[in-house]
Image 1 (tube, rainbow, N blue to C red):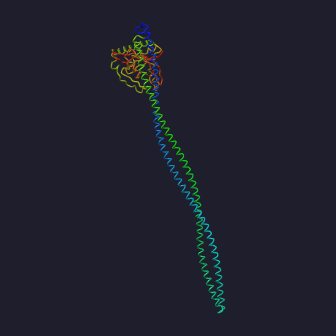
Image 2: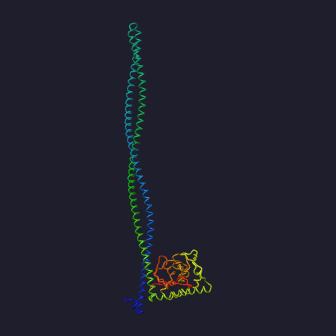
Image 3: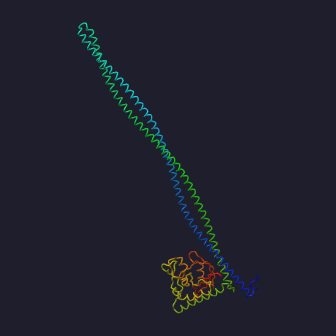
Length: 468
């Protein structure tokens, strides 16, 4: 390539034109990359927010799992204690059952023995009755013998003595038999009571044994249930420990992911800053190339926007000269919100004036080139008081629709809008993604020229158009 001083004017203009086109293309690609990075940054920020929420929930889950682990461990200890007590109760019931069994056997033995004694006493009673009968018969015989001895006189005197002795023996035998009968009767009554008591006791002992058997079975079932509960509780405690470990690991993993996403976000932010710097550089290259006499596909648009900015300045100055507008009103930064507007719209002391002056300047240009999307003046803060008619529809109830169709009376303080309003160089060509609302973006060129009123910079005229 030749040195610029060696180039002829037409060749230099051509080279500068190519430079301007290259700068424009560089700006387009850089803005596209920047938009992608901004979207990526938004997603990263959203992921960080979600991860923070997940981390908070994981922390809560970790605390809950820790409480569950403590509770299950306590339950396991309690079930073990209950199982020990149930086993002790089962051993006691079993021992009581064995003692009751021994008692029942002894009572049955007493019952059988008392019955035998009762039968023996009955035999004694019967024998004693027989003795009483014999004694009575002997007594009768003795009486008869005495009668016969009395009849015999002296000859029967010895026989009478024997009869008296026999009678006395019979009487004593009868008395002894009667005493034995009373004793045997008392013993028989006592033995009968003992027999009845032993029988009742044996019956109750059998009932106690049956109840003990039922209790033993019930305690065995309880013991088995408690053992099963203990096993399940121990398993639950083990599961709770695993859950707590898993939650802890998940929380650590989330922290690691969040740290990684944060690093990515920081990298994206740095890349975005570099892209913005590259955009500024491409814009500066374009401006310098045009200043040196270069012309490209945007040359006609540059001339157009500068002419329109001049018309706006002349219209404002004419109003001021006529006394219908003051410099203070035109440069006012008192932005009053329009009630119930969404997105918010604002008005200023000069809004009515721009509504009257700007449409005749801004509207006709839309028909000069099919690529032109809008033409609107903004002040130094990005405030756009009067837009093209198609973007100045009354707001409705849908904020998304409003964002795309009710763009007048809005402050566009994004990077492109502020640079357009604050640029004081002959022109500024920016490439940007126009936010149409609802997540829709359109790649656009934003060409602006400064509007100066009586030597004071008011803002700029923006001319947005599509790429060829």
